[in-house]
Length: 363
Image 1 (cartoon, rainbow, N blue to C red):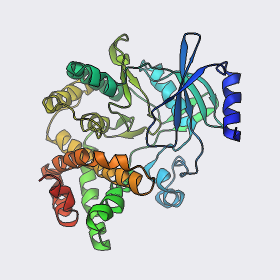
Image 2 (spheres, helix red, strand yellow; image 1 turned 90 degrees about the vertical axis):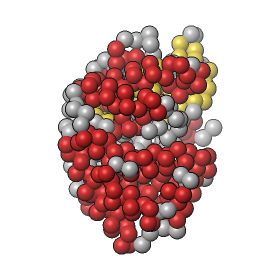
Image 3 (cartoon, rainbow, N blue to C red; image 1 turned 30 degrees about the vertical axis):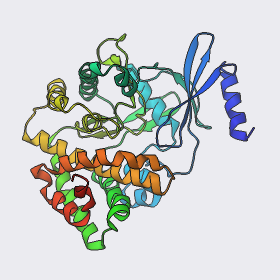
Image 4 (cartoon, one colour; image 1 turned 180 degrees about the vertical axis):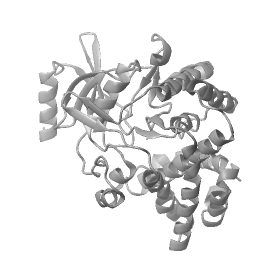
């Protein structure tokens, strides 16, 4: 038994779960590990979030030079392996009636969390078994997003001795993510881009981000899609959608999580649902569904999909996870669709010139 396993055993014993049956639960692309614990008819989820040295979180108020010196996590304002982010955000969400997991125990120094098990209703799995519920479930998810947008969250969160500061999804973070496309996707499929093309790429995005200023920011969970939400019809209102993987939340344009849900990298959403769901979100969030919102939606969608294309290639090339390459055609289709908006005409032309593989995929 290595030292981390020994610390984990001590943690479980301290919280009365050392005799539990432990079953691995599928995780995400991070270094976090999850287990389902079952004992005496009770169930909980264990999160094992080791401090992997993958980059320090962004200190509150840090400027561009400081963030660049700290690395990608600080640039993009990711929480990294900080358990404080999850604990603080989960607590704030549950206080407002949303179904984030209740925290049952924590060792913040070691990176262990014991939390409520939201059950087996993960939306991706539920829809595989009952596809006829897609409109109902997506409607519930949209209503939850609208309710989160209407809720007020303070940037500084304190829960016991834990503190977390929710930052803005600023242009530096947005661009560091969009640049994953030129850093990873372009070299893999098109041989890369030169310095002049990279500069043009950044200038085009800077102009596009201006569209995001048309609406008041709200809390974006940043990974809201069918793999990370649960359908819980036994709960009422916005609580009928269970939430996980929100530790990287930022204040962002209200379309961010909407895009995550409707332009899912892992499953095809019924195309007939897209327009009704966008309209439903705008009505619920109190946002006028007009040209300015649609332009901002397109910009945010394009930025997210450019990032995902880069991440999936990086996961293959750097991290030895080739199965993510199979998801690229779907994300590329989303990206092409986003670039068809007039607000992104310059970026569309750029991708046609420097990454023609993106467009060849559509043939």
